[in-house]
Image (cartoon, rainbow, N blue to C red; front, side, top):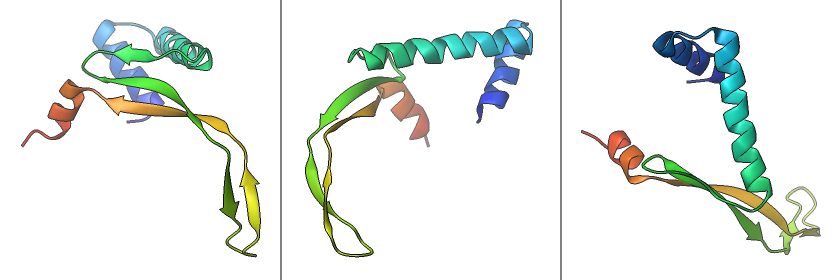
Length: 92
């Protein structure tokens, strides 16, 4: 499913316009992004949790030249799957 398909599905289910539904989805994504940028989690019980993890600086190797390069420290977004989603995906 992509964003357009999600918009159509929600608009039909809740009898909204595609434009209004797109605005709602944009706001949800902005809220999640804002939370993560403040190092807070975005928790959706049963679905999953978005969180930020710090990655340490490390040395890497350029595969083309074999030269050692320094990879700077950074933050990475992590998603942990919730039980309901995991069960739904693994249902037989």
